[in-house]
Length: 530
Image 1: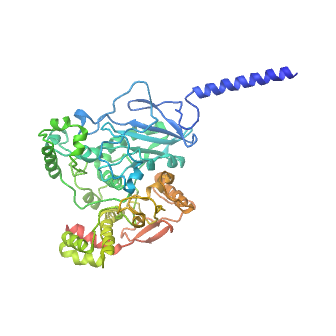
Image 2 (image 1 turned 90 degrees about the vertical axis):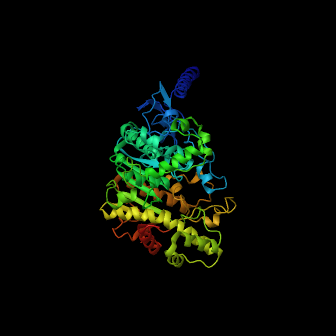
Image 3 (image 1 turned 120 degrees about the vertical axis):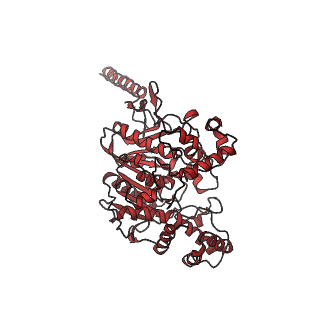
């Protein structure tokens, strides 16, 4: 009897061992980081991903959506992806686009995860989708910030796992930045069938959205329910995409966090003149000669470039298109942070502050000094930061929102005022010291992505609850175009007068827009022209 029992146990153990060995050898093991079994066919070939979040989410990382923009394709619109042979393991991020580095003493260096691999061959995207059979889920597409000079979809704070766990397909994509993404030059216009040059980084975004429209159903996403969302330059990208005829029909909703907007943008002629000066600086009289330069030589020239009115992606400037109601008629959610100017350059003293105001505002300087009073160097630095906040981010966000609402489109405005709990022993630059940061530019998105633990902060239960609340609002909006939902404070639509916002922070609920008098002044000043 005992021998028979041992034989049965031995058979069971042997069978179990064989099963486990087969599982370990198979790609379909539901273990963190292992390659998923079924391949998905997309433009270019087949890809497999990996399991994350204890097999609750599938991640497909570094999937090419366009050909490498190198060699003769440098400074050209993105071209169709180069096919690959066999099954591609999409289990690690692609390199970030070639760009200059940031200061290790800046708070943003921690956000970036430090140094990341860079390459001109960078046009890839990442997809996170809930595990299991899924279909027709809302899709959220992230566009990073960085002043159109830096940025990457692979930064740890942009991990899409937590949003995917909430029932969306989350996508992030790379786009070219700096002079490699936005150079304008007469020879480039002569090459173009549309007689356009510049805006290649924005065209990358369009190509990524076109890829999503063609391929996202294979990941369980609904190509008819795509929400684009971004912060800073990513928010400006969102409103540029809303304005561009090339992006029409590629998304159904839009979220812009801290939008910079101007009443005028550089023209193609102005940008091409700057492009020729850049070529002269590198002793490269032709585009062929410029394309022969190494990426490092291009970076060493330290020439910034950004979006322009190119006559193709943007027929006229974005502000004019919003003012005329010609932007995409989609639900729009947007807002800004209390201390947007905290991490940016500011006047060093009261004397410097007064001179900078007089130089910039001319006959309106006295009015500005009354709106932003300063009595000493300390208050002058604060006033300088607040002017930057209002002219750069608050006015642009408020203006795009109220113009969109004025034309009858569902619009939701927020004001984020919860400071991150930054430890006082963390060392940043003089500008970025913890006591001066407040609710600084970009401080909202770790809450939205649910990636608080990526950053070294003394997070509290209140921080985690706020993260859940913001994710709920953003995901609800992606599902239906309305952020409201069960157990959430009611978020009203923005009225056409543009005076009420949704406060998001320690208190969550409707409130009057802060510093509204200054915004109204700058609205008049911007339209008159500085």
